[in-house]
Length: 418
Image 1 (tube, one colour):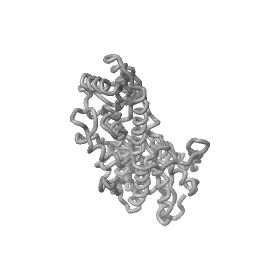
Image 2 (spheres, rainbow, N blue to C red):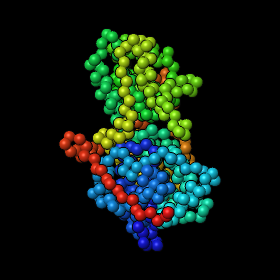
Image 3 (tube, rainbow, N blue to C red):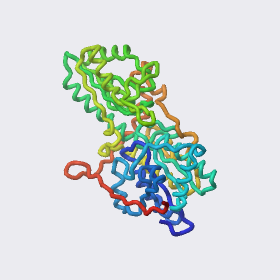
């Protein structure tokens, strides 16, 4: 804990679905903070995101050694635990903010860095506004993260590149199997990937193809209403030509009337849990065309694949963590550390601050220029955008044939509030 009045502690937390590189961001934040002992006392991590602040369940990251941080760089998941929890508006629940600022004051927290997606950026915006209204000295900075790649204000979101690399590889390898097993009977394979409203991950599977007839032959994205008749015609044509058809499906594809092709259930807050669109599409192919059909759902695998991390994605994750600390120390309240693409070939990029108000709760969809006119695949422009994001490999250490992922047992600090 800080004992020097000129220094304040920094609160860092992870939010939303975790990724293969979010811990690299965490390690970079801690390393950057330790390089400035004149300004930052220690980094206190919230256990399970902002809930850690509300529960006063804080982890002093000083218990992580330099070698621990190096191992953290290659660890998928979220070492401090994540959450899906939205703060209420300050006016609607002042007691919630009373609690937060009591905890911040009790632990001498002067900086908040929140690592997540568009909903998490809304949390940053709310905390920043509440701090100003209370005249509490707090600098709030957002750090982007999401495999969905749907954050506004940034060219790409750390976590996406590695997930994209995984699903593109999965489609490539499944395609080898399909090509070997093609027969006169006809065969269809459907892979369902994440993407509630944005089809970035589905689009990324196009990188599996090096030739026009390589899988995936069809990509279904939420941005394009699903037309079953047009789709089945394309499947039939592909199978007649190749003997099989490989299809990528975003979990959130919808009919022309806006209804979901498939949903699983609703949670206690009424949020729709998606899943099953791939199975639904595969069965519709079998019903209509009689082909053998298989489907696969990578689910958590696509966002936790630490064995197949994109080197560029990892570099992005580290850079936004470092930049967020720099912004915080510069007093840049209410900004997000965003990635700016400076050139496609050779790929170059930088990190720049963007206002949280331009990011919070907004969704960045796949633009029309990236979707082929027939709505069933992506354009060359999409490939040019996507290709650098999956480039390079950063493999973890292996032990006994599997990745040697560290397990950390991190103790919470003593609570100072009742």
